Amino acid sequence: MTEEAKTLSVPVRLGGGRGYRVEIGAGALARLGEAARKSLPKEARKVALVSNERVLKLYGERAVSSLKGAGLEVSHYSMGEGERFKTLRTAERVLEFLSESGLERSDAVVALGGGVVGDVAGFAAALHLRGVAFVQAPTTLLAQIDSSVGGKTGVNTRAGKNLVGAFHQPAAVVVDTATLKTLPRRELTAGWCEAVKQGAAGDLRLFERTKRFLKEESRRGSNRAAGANVVELDGGRDGELARIIAAQCAFKARIVAGDERESLKRDDARSRKILNFGHTVGHALEAVTSYRRFRHGEAVGYGCVAAGEISKRLGLLDGSELESLREAVALAGRLPSAADLDAELVGRALRKDKKAVGGSVRWVLLESLGRARVVDGREVPERVVLAAIRAALAAPPNPPK
Ligand SMILES: NC(=O)c1ccc[n+]([C@@H]2O[C@H](COP(=O)([O-])OP(=O)(O)OC[C@H]3O[C@@H](n4cnc5c(N)ncnc54)[C@H](O)[C@@H]3O)[C@@H](O)[C@H]2O)c1
Ligand SMILES: [Zn+2]
Image 1 (cartoon, rainbow, N blue to C red):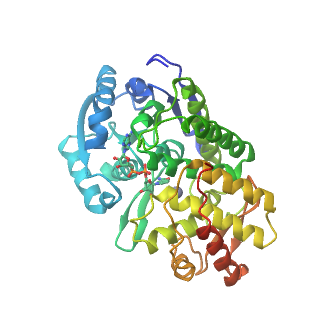
Image 2 (cartoon, rainbow, N blue to C red; image 1 turned 30 degrees about the vertical axis):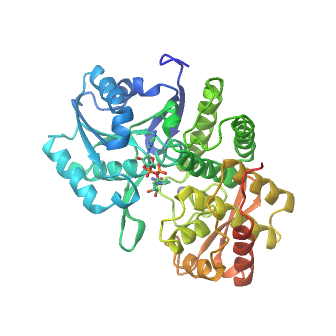
């Protein structure tokens, strides 16, 4: 596809007539300036681009020239790379930069990068002058299908991940699917695990469609040189990739529209809570390995299988559906081994998860693929949890050979 290729447009409709669009396509960064112009106040003059060195080097020029082309004055800030820079300290530095740049109330922050950049930049945008607009230009698969849509922003503290933050919806999201071509394989696997999660938790058709796409990718991939750590999406598949990402964004948009702030009162099958499917065990796996072994999405891959195992053991989910879920996680890519981890340790760690309400874990389980049910931890026997974790960790859902 050329830079001129058509972009897909997914609306996110929020209450009170608010909303924004997610523009998706190969080469969409060329239209970042136009998307910003259309969505920002007409008085907007300046934008502050927040990114990191790696992403700036790869895509900074394209983003900046598009923004300048739309008549915006651009300054840029490069934050440290990776989760360990998702801190209040970094947010403070970004805030200082926004002040130094003279960013006014009608101006905006643009986040160019993965979920870490998006979360920190969005958080700084929520705080600067009590809130300026921000535009997301996500460059990882996880950010493109999940974190850039929905308005959750924030940082980690010593007490845990994402414990400090704000709801601050973007004014626009521009997803350039061509940026995925430079994304390391593991980051891609992590993103696909979250894609499988979204389908499994709330939309059977999305689940099946994502699985079909991954099957085809895996068929083509097996013909490619082994060991390549960079994604080589075939030219002809660009269109389908953009459509899958659009479908994933549309799903996330639907859930967010119905429960923008993840209401404490809601725990039905359409509530924002269901997006935590796979995250209870996933977070525990990250914690017991000190956040070093797994990419977040990889841990969620195991977490989805574990939650599926619990669902089956409680008689909620059919065995063949659990098998289908396992297959989908396997198709997302190879996960680091977890066979050496102690299930009891994981079980203890998950009881500390912050998603606990009133002191007990809230499990997101499955009644069927595409239909989740939130279950109070007290209704799930400890031995079931442990057996499910053991089953999920012992047989890593690795890609079919
Ligand atoms: N706000 C939300 O709703 C939400 C939802 C899910 C996850 N998150 C957050 O997102 C974060 C994870 O995001 P992530 O998985 O995108 O990780 P990340 O932002 O750390 O990016 C992963 C790595 O890829 C690099 N990178 C980014 N784009 C690239 C490209 N196109 N080519 C090559 N390298 C590239 C980054 O520099 C980084 O090293 C976590 O902090 C998580 O809490 C937020
Ligand atoms: Zn996640």
